[in-house]
Image (cartoon, rainbow, N blue to C red):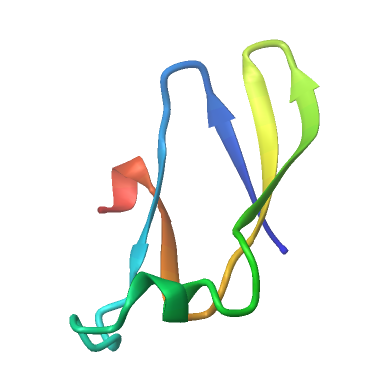
Length: 65
C-alpha cells in the first residue's frame, strides 16, 4: 500500500505507466480488481490516503508531474 498525505486542494494522479502498451484494454488494467483508496488519517487540513493499485498504473502527487 502506498500512503500519501494531501492537504486541502492538493491532488493525486493515477494513470497508465509509460511501459504499458497504449493499446492495452482497460479490462486488462483492472483484471486483478479495482483501485482501492483508504482514508487512513485526518489531521486538521491534512488527510492520509492509502492506495492499492495494479503495478501497471503510476500514482503520483500533483507537484511531481
